[in-house]
Amino acid sequence: MPRVVLGVAGGIAAYKAVELLRQLTETGHDVTVVPTDAALAFVGAPTWAALSGKPVSASTWDRVHEVPHVRIGQEADLVVVAPATANLLAKAAHGLADDLLTNTLLTARCPVVMAPAMHTEMWEHPATRANVATLRSRGVLVVEPAVGRLTGKDSGKGRLPEPEELAHLVRQVLARGSADLDLAGRRVVVSSGGTREHLDPVRYLGNRSSGRQGHALARAAVARGAEVVLVSSSGLPDPAGVKVLKVTSAQEMHDAVLAEARSADAVVMAAAVADYRPAERLAVKRKKTDTLDVEFVQNPDILAALVAARGQGQIVVGFAAETGDDHATVIEHGRAKLARKGCDLLVVNEVGESGHPTGFEGTHNAATVLGADGSTTDVPLVTKDALADVVWDLVAARL
Ligand code: PMT
Image 1 (cartoon, rainbow, N blue to C red):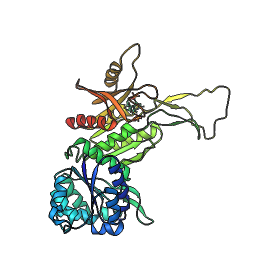
Image 2: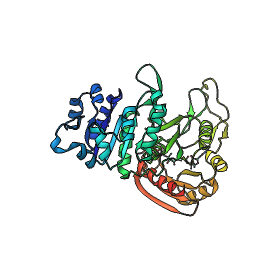
Image 3: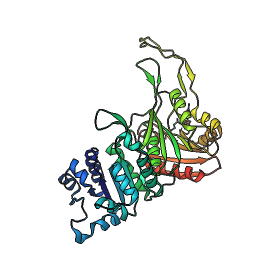
Image 4: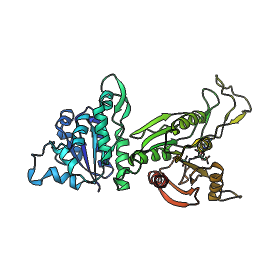
């Protein structure tokens, strides 16, 4: 059972850490909660103790015979601090050790994830920026806060990402089993979901993409230290630490991806983009007729546009949702598509009817990743998270 230390600093988002604790224990993690005194002012020790099944203290002076200020950090497989306040970030950056949590951070040799939450002004203050940069330079995974409602009536950057997404990120880092942030300092753009091409205000043409594979790619890139932009037409929750741009149609996805790609080190097109859209989008609901004639026009090919516009050293990855037919196998179709599209890597996944084990909708996928250099990487049926890590391994090796 992976041993996780959940550090909780004194911010109002401490109440969300209760749900994070629940998510982690429910998915088979042995969690030790180490709050600060200020965190205990928001959520009391009985809550943490009851949900973790362990005694809880903020102090180095309790159960001294067990040497908790050293033991807890040494025994951990991962430390996650959520929320991490500006004060906690400052203490950690400067190596202060005046309570159990800051001592634990100094003794831990496992991956450390910090999820800051604070008001926008505090997050943007040069002191906090410098502390975050120091922690990142030491290999701490400092997750970008979410944008949205803050404590009071105000909104902005500084929200703690949703507990379920933080728990997913923790599992992703643990599954990788490494604190190696090989995408640190890199900016990546990922697309996810199926585009919707509207006929009128009510109806659209879409496809079965859930967005799961693209979201997994975004999450995996965060876990490896990248700055991540996700351009998505999916309704899935925003992954922790990701800037999400919501789009609907292929044209909107084209505009957002191309704009974000200008300063990106890598772009991964996992979205299922409609090749065609209705020539006309009616302003009023189309009335029922015996037959329906709709003229379609081609959408822009985003992947082709990315390849044409790419800067020096940028890696462009496409996906191919393929079915075999009388003319060629899935892989033969994939090779032809790689040659046509001109990207660096093409992740070929077979798709089929609903219930097919790979491709659309499910939690798992299998693929063959074809490289423009002639390489072939077979990935058996694994979680979409695991496939995402294979894709980033291949990207990281090319960057
Ligand atoms: O979202 P999930 O339910 O998890 O499902 C995942 C997935 C099956 C959607 C994903 O793994 C996948 O295969 N995505 C690509 C689907 C697709 O559109 O394949 P394609 O063979 O039609 O397109 C090839 C590539 O060109 C893709 O990278 C696509 O994003 C891109 N494309 C396609 C058309 C277009 N107009 N512009 C594009 O950029």
